[in-house]
Amino acid sequence: MAELVQAFDSEFGDRDDALLVLAGLYAGRADLDLGSELRALRLRRPDRLKIVPR
Image (cartoon, one colour):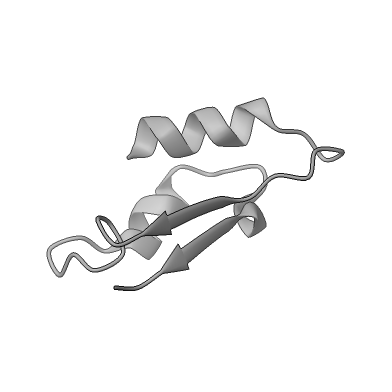
């Protein structure tokens, strides 16, 4: 998951109209603190990520 999110963050700039939606597979895992994992990536534009729970 980290590679996908980092690739998305580096590929799309401020002028791009893009959004990455993480749903189901990652959003509902009890053994994964998704918020902590995403913060650790230090993304340039974390506001472009949306998490949809199951």
